[in-house]
Image (cartoon, rainbow, N blue to C red):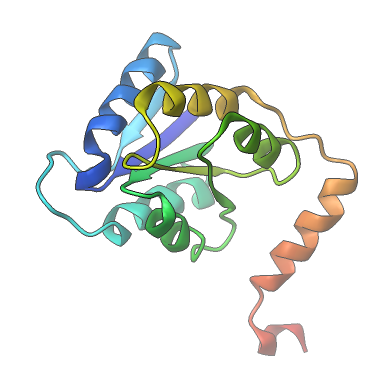
Length: 151
């Protein structure tokens, strides 16, 4: 598995902790920034992470900002991305099993790092169930088609 990872300034410290556990688990990753706690704009990080996942350059993506909300909104603008904001382990499990989410977003100002790391581990190692969920994901994919392409 290869993970694309990124954060804005508010998520920088937590992103570095996540990279440490990825190293411990021997999971390959590419860091798309930011590289310091200096202020930056989250869409500038979310877009390349989401594009890496969308293009197949990475299997999954992890994005961290203050709340996780901005990263989630930005990443979900990229076709093929199912970014899910998770602040608890149950949601992380369900978003993989039912929604086959391919980008995880986390809010560093909302949860502590211990919980965040458990969420990451759960999300990384939970498999998509398929079955009845595949029909729903197909309907979500249709929503990405511009109206004039449907006709």
